[in-house]
Length: 205
Image (cartoon, rainbow, N blue to C red; front, top):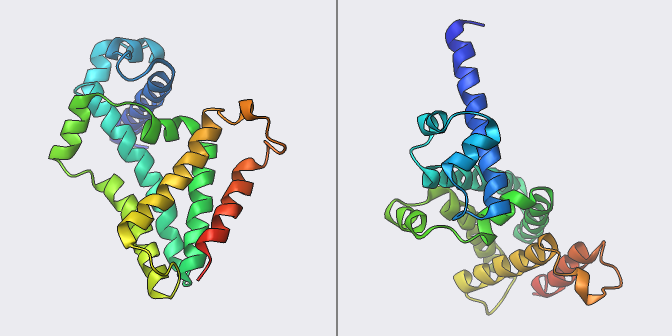
């Protein structure tokens, strides 16, 4: 390996380290309470080193959001190979739930944590392609379902939003352990059980 290749790899490794530490701190302390100093201390580097890679905390947050939505969107797009749109939609739900269960910190960062207003304003100013593209995959699949005779009488965008909201609710309640206090008979399987009940509504023609 050449010296240039080694330096490039080390640079990527340090960037990954910064993002991983930031994710942990954002979830544990909250975005507003996390500082560049906190992040630098967590990885045992100087504050200046963090600034070499990211101009500020919002740039880190943006990079994390982009990374997470790119991962989820990539898993969704693989499902375009499933020709039957209803089967594709059902598979997307399972992928979404599995991603949330496997990556609770990432999911919290994507959907549950309150982001700083300047970050939200920045996203509105520059189109957030990854987030929009991920929802577009769902929108396209629901449109295909309607075209195939499923989901009759529904409107595309509100229905897609409703489906996303239902999946988000199932995942968020589980990740934030909100199901523990309601004395469920089968808490270990409630997420998939609830999803299967949801599918009974969705699959009706």
